[in-house]
Image (cartoon, rainbow over all chains, first blue to last red; front, side, top):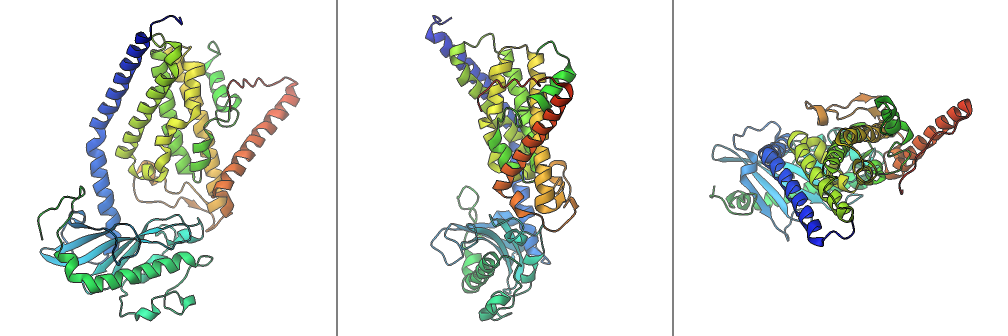
Length: 217
Length: 225
């Protein structure tokens, strides 16, 4: 058995490798389209809650804008902005940013801001906060993130954009203070950015997912 | 082991040689994903599917595989199957795929699978190997579900939350018994405690049976830990 020539082993390996590769290739063929649709659907679906009460008719994901660092938005990584339109008219902007100073690493946030500067919705996309304490920032665990809806930089005034314990207007979470503070700060910073860059945000060309530019708006 | 009936085979996989409880294989995914019942069930199903398919393929090709290259071939087969399962999950259970994250691709590293290929599928006919994959995979999945249910119940105060990730529909909160639980159980140390309790419970039951019958249970501890 041990005297079998080495090339025979090589051939066996090659044949098995070919079989396995085709197995993966066939599965990929069968699933690729569904996976792509799922990805788009999930993105659209996860962006909807930040657009409560707005009328819009554009596909949200088509007007993506990537803002590479450095930028004045929260977080050190690339921020993403989705522009939302009703016909030709800009309606709102969705920001995907990171609140860097969470209790356990960055908190990925989705923040919707209407053209008049009011918050249309906030959702936590990704976080590693403590289960049972900090994770009540998730909409499936508690309604805490809903308290920002309808507020803007004028309401309350910037100094009061903080937790009640820090002399501001917003509710905290029992047992967790770092997590909510990080989120309040990130929202205020995003509102400030939008206030200063409103025109530029909507004038920029869209990036598609591969980073290539599409037609200008 | 080959001549015993199906029922005996199931008893072996689910209890006597349970991959998680007795052979202590595949502990990394077991400890990592069992924070909730649905995660345990999802990873259990994925592992079961990979185990059955890999046992079938290894057994079907066993006559052509020279012993000196068997390990790279097992790795190749298992890695391809896991990739297929991952694609299938992404296509049909996208929410669950997101929830299990890296642990679907990491099924590759579940040594329970390569262990079954080595000790069983490489020496037995296809049918018997598929049954082996079925009973061992079921044993592993049931353990994942038990520990998942335990940790979710006492750690979060709920049971069967987010079952929609497997069966579709609106997000569900499951049976909510309390708003909070004993946090530690949901966190990583809780996984170790829960597994230890499960193993202790099994040993206690076995011990009692042994006393009753005064006959040694036959633990065939064939493999490395």
